[in-house]
Image (cartoon, rainbow, N blue to C red; front, side, top):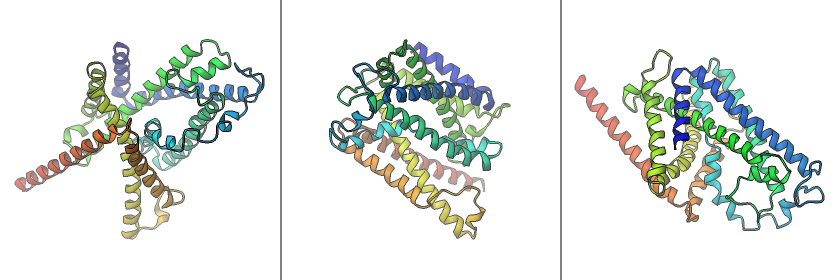
Length: 338
């Protein structure tokens, strides 16, 4: 926990001084992660094609592990039971929209970020998964050892464990860094719209909403303490909520886009006025909404992940009730002032 707290202090300082420092630190954190994944994919391809020797193989492994035991040896249900974990891994893509307010030229930067993010996800996420699935038989795959380390050991890469531990630590810091930024800006946005107290929208000389940052950081400290004091209760609740809440956010984004387009045209505007239009509209937002909803529903059929629904649905309900009471209180206050 001491190392975790130290990293949290560094992340807090990265976000506290200015957006420029945050962006610079995030660039280097992400660069290490990207370089490692690209190197992993390249080495994996060399191993799959037989250019690099692989433990246990006298010939090129190829893609035999994809089909030698059948396409779904444990049934198709495994695809659905892993969705919560997969969704959590892809969380953060919504940051593109959050950062739009601080971009110098959002009309140019945001469409570019959307396209490059899509390609990076395809290359880095899917590329590394293809390499692992090709080199690790499904009966050997598990959670006791990092699959990255396992593959690097197979192809005789020295210090594989130490290298990947460093990369994983960097990736975690990067995720926490961007997560703190997103949380801070979300609180600022909610305050700016009058959903939560106005104090959260106040910014310092550096343009950073300090109170929103501090409160977001307190949430992280609370999570750290609970991981040591109550790992099987409070911490489990926080992890479950954070994993499923991401899916709820994606559903809200898809629904918001559908409603926005309808209202935009209803107000007399033309589609040509939009600086960026979603390809294949409305197929994409409908697909995003329905697939996210299905991933929530299908969690119920997995006893090990069902607990996420038990915690997240009441949490979301409490948030809506609190929002309703806050807005009602504000309306009464406005009436009294008038």
